Structures are given as structure tokens and as C-alpha cells.
Length: 464
Image 1: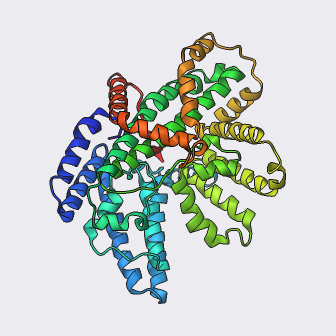
Image 2: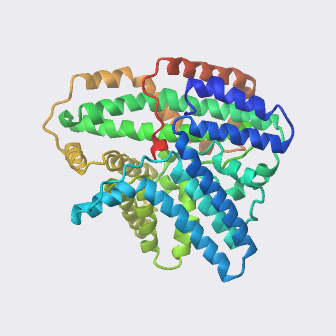
């Protein structure tokens, strides 16, 4: 089940809200929320519930053990055991086939390739439990003592499938007790409707164009169409994932939780480093706090640390060498930007913005094509193609003009242009308060109409 499905919108969500607010007892609320979260997760692949529940209970017990043994060598033993088990499960299910293929290429193996499918959300909840046990080991949080509460934290349907990566320290108090806050719920409805619209009206439309230009017509693309195809993939990826994050944050507010922001207008960035401080923020902070800083951070071997973090970031996204290449690409760019900062600081903002967009859009080709033959052919076509422009290309451009304008408007960081105390922002906020219910209803109805006949409605990040 996905957030942008009619089943979720008009059956699952109303029922889960009804049960959650049918009682003021926090225990019953947590029970209901846990049950609905497990149903949500099991909707497509019920067998993977057992793996997720095992992970939650194992790390619940490990957290208690680490806290009990804190200050002794046994606490480190518990920490290492937790990391080994969790990373081991992630490697087995996500990277088992990849490891087999690479070993078998050099040394023929006497057994068949493992055919395990990828458990939905395993990359996200694995990082959640690792951050939990590490924070307990560091003494930054106290271990949860109620296994139901911890299972609810891990399995919350608002973030389980595709993030954001929520740390226990962020919502520990809300796990124990939540109160009805009508202002928060109103904000949650607005945030959810905006995210749903971004997903259905922007990401899905871009996705149709991506399939047309990067799959169907790949070997007959002109350079213009190649750049157009990866630009559409860049739009799809951003509005798909940021739309999902908006919906997750909005849903969390409806149930009394406050998740941190996961995107902050990345396409307004003026450097690659700035872009990834704005993109998938929860993942960047995880690697910063649990990999980059322990390796030495800015204090020693900074270039090495950056390259390691980005290599791991690439592999986190998928079990293929193109993801490792994609991560290395950005690692090298980050290092270059660090050493060329004195030049970037003197470069006009518009040029920095332009160079950033070109590098980001180009990187989507590496991210999209897992087959290196296709990737090399496509990159070659980006810079020189013998193919003429296909007849339908100009038609696709002209029929989507207003859609392109909407995309640009939604990418502009209006809240950074008009800051919190700006008089224009204050006037707009006051007037918008009166029309917000109607705007939310309009976005919901429009998104529903688009979903009724939709044939293309995947969430890209569910496969990571």
C-alpha cells in the first residue's frame, strides 16, 4: 500500500484515525497504531513482517542490555552484536545477489544465486535501529522499556516504507504520550495534501515522460531528448520523494508526532554540497553522525572521510555498481568543492546555481541506468548524437508548458525569499488561513480525480 492510493486515502487512513482518536488512553492508542502499521506493511508482502518484528525486538533487548552494561566492555559487545546482526540482515537480503554475481564472475561458485526479494523499507528501519542502539551506547538517550512502544516506533506506517529516517531521540516523548493539538492536525492535513499533489500531479506526469524517453526511445534519442529525459527523471525523483516525505510529515502530525524536515528546496542550491544539505536530510545526518564524525570528520583525513561516506551513500541506494559510481561521483565533487572554495566564493550566484543544476541532472543518468552498456551509450548521446529529434518531442514540450511553469514555481524557495518576519509573508499567511480548508479540499479532490484513471503511480524510494 502507498499513500497515494485510493485504498489508503479513503479506507485505511480514516479507519486508523478513527481508532486512534476513539480513546484518550495512550496504551490503546499505541496498540491501535501498531496494528494498523503492521497491516499497512503487510498489505503487499506479509512475510516480511516477521523480519521487521524480529529486528525491533532484537534491538529492543540489545538496547536494554547496553544501558545496563554501560561503562563496561560488555556494552561495546552488545553494540557490536547489534550492528553486525542488522548490517548482516541488510547485506543478506539487499546485497546477497550482488555479492554472488561479483564473486561468481571471478570464481565460479558451486551453488545457485540467491533469489531473495528485497524487504520493503529495510534500508530505512535498519538505520533507525542502529541509531537507537548507538545513541544508548553514547548515553544520549535512555532505552525504551516497553516492547510495544518500541515496535510501534519502528513500524509506524508514516515513515516505515520510505522514510524519513526518524531517530528515537526525536520522538521519544511522543512515543510515550501524545495529546490532541488541532493546530498541529490542521498543519498535518495541509502538508499531506500538498505532498499528495506533488506526487500525483508532478511526479507521476514526469514519470510518464521518463518512461517514454529513457526506456521506450533510448536508442533513438537526440542529445536534446536525452537531456530532457534525465531532467524529467530529476523532477520525478524530487517530487516523488519530497512528496512522500511531505505526506509522511503530515500524517505524523495527524497522529501527534513531529518528524524533522527531509527536503529544503534542493533545486535552489548554489553548490553540490548545498544541494545535499537540502536533499534527503535525514540520510545525510545519519551518515554525518554515525560514519563521518567517527572517522574523524573535519579534524583528520577529511577527503578520505568524504569519499567513504559518499561511496556508502551510493551503495545504500542499491546493490549495483552504478550506485557506487554515483556515490563516488558526488564524493569527488564534494572534495573538489572543498579545495576550490576560494573560487566558488567569488563566483556569481547565478553561475553557481547553473553549474550545480547541470551536475545534478547529469548524475541522474548514473543513478537511472544500472546497465553500464546502456549508461555509456546514453552519456555518449548526451554530448553527440546522430539521431534527429523525434516528431513527438516538440509536442511534449508545448503540451506541458503550464506544467513546467508549475514545477518551477514549486521549486522556488519562497520561505527563504520571504523570511518569517517579512511583511509580504505575514499578509499572505493571514489571508491563506481563511482559504486553507478550501485549498486542501481542492488539492485532495484534484489528486483523487488524477488517481482514478492513473496507470502510473509507483513510489521510487520504496525499492531502496
